[in-house]
Image 1: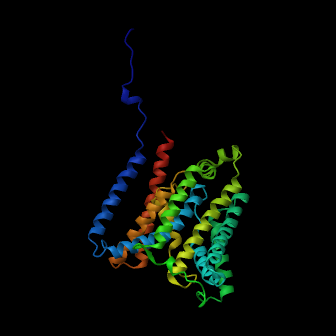
Image 2: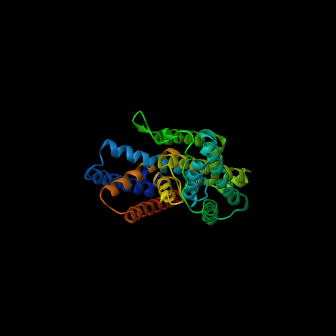
Image 3: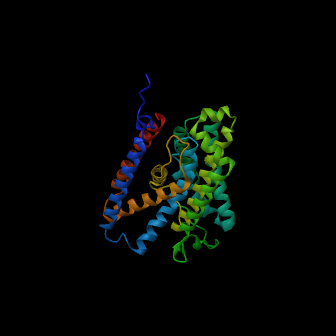
Length: 327
C-alpha cells in the first residue's frame, strides 16, 4: 500500500509546560491584585513611603541574597539567620570602641564563622540543615544572653561616628546602595565564577555533583559563610539605624528573607534561582508588608498573608517541577 498513516504535526509536539503556564497566570493575577491594592491604599504612592519601602527591602534583601546561596545549594533554609543579624548588630555596636573599620570587619567575620560552622555540619556530615540551624539559633541566643545579661547594647559614648550608615545619600537611604551593590555582586559571583556554577550544579543534582567529584563540603561551607557575611552586613546596617542592639530587634526578618527568596522564583529544592530575582522578591515582600501596615493590619495578619503567599509559591514551584520532569 502506498498510503501510510502519519500522525499530524501537532501530535508529535512536546506537551506544553502546564505548570509554567499556571505560574504565569497566578503571577499576573498576583501582580494585578497588588497593583489594585496599592492604588487604593492612602499614602502608599508618596516619596516618603517609597523610601520607607526601599529601606525595609534593603535589610530583608541583603539577608535574602545570602539565603539564596544556601537554597541554591540544595540545603533548604537557615532558620537562624535572623538571630545572627541581631547578634551582628550587637557585636558591631560593642566593637565600635576599637574603631569603625575594625568593628565592621569583626562583625562580618563573626557572621561568616558562626554560619559557616553550620555549613560544615551540613556539608561534611550530612546533617539536616533545618535541625542544625534551629539548634544554632538557640545556642546563639543562649550565649549572647549569658554574655550580655539580656540587656541592650549601645555604642560607646566616645566611639567613632557611624551615622552615615543610616543617613540618606543623594536623597536615597544608604542601606539601599549596599543592597543594590550586593545584589549585582552576588549575581556576578553566581553566574561568572566556578564557585557559583558548582553551587548551582550541586543543588540541581547532588548525586551528579558527587559523581563529578565536586567539593561538596567546601561548597556548602562557602554558601553558608556567604549567608553569614550577608547577615553581618544586615546587622551592621540595622545596628546603625537603631543605634542599639538586642535579640528582639529582627522580628520576622528570617521568614521575610525566606519569603523573598521563594517569591523571587528560587526553587526550594535548589539548582534554580537568581540573586537578582531574590532582590525583586524582597521589594515585593516589603511593598506588601508596607501596604498592609498602611491599611491598619496587625503584625500577625501580615505574617499570615506572607505565609499564604509563600505556600502558594512553593506549591506552584512543585507543580512546575513535576510538569517539567514529565516532558
